[in-house]
Length: 501
Image (cartoon, rainbow, N blue to C red; front, side, top):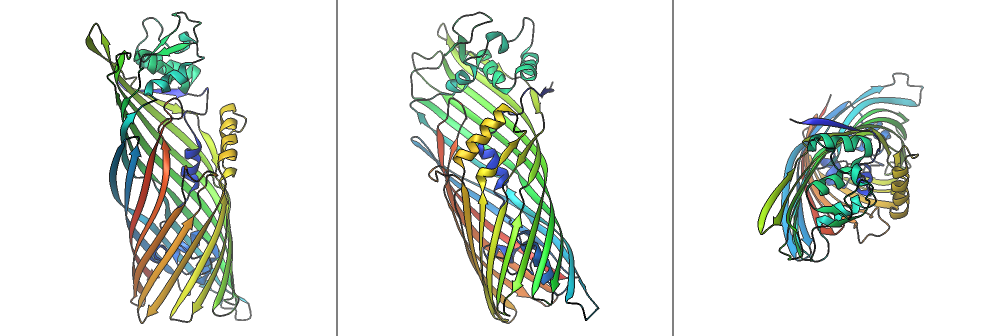
């Protein structure tokens, strides 16, 4: 029977820098027009997704407007791990955006404030659907190193079951009293992967039962979920030359991840020759941020924009579950050991502050025939913070974030050419790595194309975009810290229906 274990002695279970980045790297998928032009909309407005870049953009609409967009996202991964290579592909269809802007015109002709806009816009700001497999022969490290690293320095009576206590009871109690690290050591001990140097309660030194080198490893990664953003927007225009706007944003996190490591060896010096280790994570959260922005028409053709995105202040909850199975030789016979706590660990809620962002924009409009637009944005990822900062483990993690992450710039360029009722669009974007060492997590390059047809009060738009980024994924934060090298390519197809209200 599944049981719930409440862990409140430590906020941290296995958070690392990648968790901070996951919720800091917003990628507005947006409308087809927005996507086709590389997201370069900070000085343009007049598109529902542009409101998420510059909140002044809603006041550019001449009439009340709404839109809905569906996207087909495909993620293709080429994975290398030691001598093994794999390819995987995952596709999903989701609601990219939904929103409406309501325009109220000032009937007082003597007032320069001629227009007022109220709008709401939902945008999917990140998609977490991903699947890949890494496999190869590791000549150095084993999953036994993970359990050994967690166990060293812990008392034996704090990682083992009491007399008559079941696996589920012991796992839950150890988590409640001592935390996540002790639970990992408990799994390794019960799975015969590690043994104490001395079989006494006071023992704090351990040895591993997996030795010899050349470990066949297969690591399967699967994740699902999204990060959504709901913006409540107010904007106004002055003489249709100056536009100002404010967004109050609500954010939603839903992230599920399952990893499964299968390891085997035929080493004569190794007592344990097979290990299956599964980890499941469910993360939910909500957050708040605000945005301020302005757009100015310098001339009828030239426009400039400036916007500020505040940090997002999240409240996050995590739940985990684990499963371990091992096979060992005893007297020449294989003995299977299953350590299945059947417990969901529920962790104390914590906070995450993601970095703010400043975006500067330029656009040149060639009358009714087309336009060019450019956005430049800067975000300092080293300002990410887990809270409470008084927690020793969070304080150490925040120091790592400050040391390893950096300020990153992004460049977006978009263009549109109109021929009668048809629009042809294209875009390019480049995003710097958030890491100081970009060999670990590379830059992103992307391009996009699109078409649109305007029926008058109705428009249909289509976009194709593709982006690439190479990165290293560390299997575990302790012991088995080798990384899989991943070349990731994201391909997106977006269809938008826009209409005047």
